[in-house]
Structures are given as C-alpha cells and as structure tokens.
Image (cartoon, rainbow, N blue to C red; front, side, top):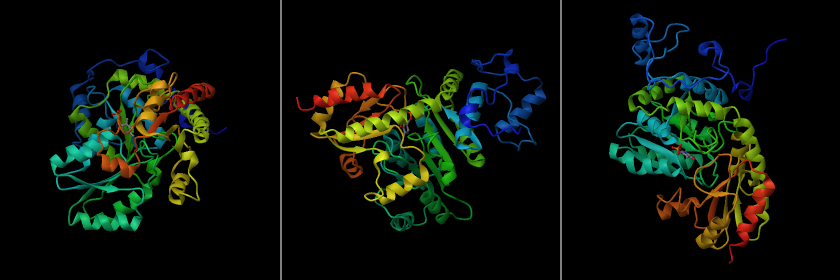
Length: 420
Ligand SMILES: *Cc1c(COP(=O)(O)O)cnc(C)c1O
C-alpha cells in the first residue's frame, strides 16, 4: 500500500526528530545548551558560511548547529512542525508575537516607506506602527472595512507620491471585532505597486484562526505571523511568536532574528512542541464550544449584538460573508458581544464571572473575558476606537475547552448581575 501524505495532526508527535539522536528517547529532550561543539574547524567554517549567508547551501546541505541564538534542536524541530500547517517553506520562532511582528516590520521597511494596514489591529501592533515606526521615517495608511478595492488603490496612489509601499499588513479576522479582510486584495495591491526592484511584502497576522483554520499563504500572503502565546501555546503558560512563509523572505527574517537576538529559548521551544500535539484537539473543541456560547448570547435580552463569524449573513454583509467563505475553514473560538448599558454594565458582568477568568490573552484551554476599550485597546485614540466599533459596551470572549453547559451557566448568572 502506498503511504499517504500524513496530515499535520498525525505528524505533530514525531516529525523532524529521530530518537537515535538522543539515546533512543521517544520525546525530543530539552537541549538546554548555549553552544554546540564542531567536529572539525572545517565544519565550523562551513556552518558559519551558511548562517551569515556568505554562500548558498550545496545540494541537501543544512545549516549545522552553532549557537542557540542562531539555532537549537528544540526550535528547529518546532519550526519544521509548525510550518506543516501552512505548508510553508520555512518557519522561525520568536520569544513573543510582538517580536515576530516587529522583526518583520524592521526587516522589510526602510526610511521613507509607507505601510498599509487593516483596522483594527492588535493593540501592540497598532502602537508600534503609529508611535515607533514614524521615528524611523515610516508612515502608515489605513485600510478600513468599508473600503472598496478601487477606493483603496486610488487612496494609495495619492498618498504614495513616489514613496515606496513597503508592507501590506493584514490582520484578519481582526481583534476584537472579527472584521474580515480579503488577503487577495493585498496580493493585487502588491502587484500593482511593484517596481522592477521592489515588491511590497504581504504580511498576515493569523493569530485568530491559525494555524488550523486559515492559510494566508494560499491566498497570496508572503509571510504569516503568529502570537504563539495564543492557540499554538494554548495553555496560558508561555509567551512566544512565530513567522512562516516563502523561503526568500524567511531567510531575511531569520538573519535579523539572529542579530536582534529575539529567538525563543529551548525551554519555550520544548513547551510549544508539547502544545502542538493537542493543537487540533483543543481548537476543534474550542470552536464547538464557541458556537454554543454564541447562540446562547444571541438570544439573551441583555446582549445587543454578538460579533461572531458564525453569524455572518450573506444578505446583510455580503462582502464579509464572501471573504469568510473564501478564506476561513471554521467560525473559530473568538467572539465579542455588546452588553446593553455600556461600560458599567459590561464591568458588572465581568466582575460577576465565576468560571470564566477576567484576563487578556486568548486561545488557551480556559475561557477568558476582557473589555477591549479599556484593556487591550486602551492605547487606541477614542475617535479611531469608535470608527472600528470598539465600544464601551463590548466584551471579548475567548472560549476554552470547558463543558459548554458550565460556560453557559456562568455567562447567564453574570448577565443577571448587569442590572443590579
Ligand atoms: C497577542 C497577539 C499579538 C502579540 O503577541 P504576544 O505573544 O503577546 O507578543 C499579536 N497579534 C494578535 C492578533 C494577538 O492576539
């Protein structure tokens, strides 16, 4: 019988590791070492030539182990496994999602460039683009939900005036509103604004649905960024990030990572290897729970609106619905909802939760609730928050793996406190 192409979930326990490397150990050990011994000086020289990009690898030649800021077995095996989900050429793991994102931005932007970005963005990314990048002469332009393709292209043409469009940065679904953006538009814009010696890089933050339910590289992205703190880590016990993508871009990302020194350590790598074994199980259960929770909230008299991918309607939001059908293979496990009565009502509900924890972050085994307007998105100016629909009445909920009846019991009793 021919061996089938095993699916990623079947490979998460073994791919990229051979027990004979470690005394037959079934599991990849933690390689808690800063440096690696070369067999010969010639070997050390060859490794450095590749690490510093001084020559192209010979056929079948792989970068050897040098020093844990450059590479380490726990990171390399993790990167091989993580890359399978997106069918990426290569992957790089970082010490946080923010370091993954900012390394991409610093590598592919230069002074004078413009970055186009969707709205809303993760608070940290938003702040980096609006507060830090201008210090390096990089300005930004926004891509909003109501934009048509033609309007967006025209606005860019007006704004660029000879400047380079460095990066098209897309966060979809957007945190915390679940707004969807069409990755193919990003690809089209990149082609339109390409010149002989430069092509804008299309980057997608895939934290909300990835790596299971959305594969941006298939839709024309060049690089995919993750906060691995979220679903990939999944247990609220580690901070990490990752970038996957096309080889030519990944090589540059890895070189800058080496010099910024913001790779993850072996212990983080090992924890994430462990997490990956249950990634599919956890995410599927979370998505199932989220549907039950979303349906409960939609019927509740204290809830004004539920922002959930499963409630997109072809009739009311044809564009959003079409993007969903094209790009997403699940309705996910993130939702937000508007509580009648504004901030005071939202706070009363949050303060009354017993099983769901009042905390930021998302994608982990336990359910978490928070208030975006005053917490994750507190740094976004009021006017922009209003434009994006991040209101005082909004609560964001990341649904975990608990029994759905217990989650509903908790949300119900907390909503009953809203009027007290
Ligand atoms: C959490 C998050 C980040 C930042 O990741 P960290 O691991 O906290 O640095 C970036 N983007 C999105 C969508 C996130 O949810």
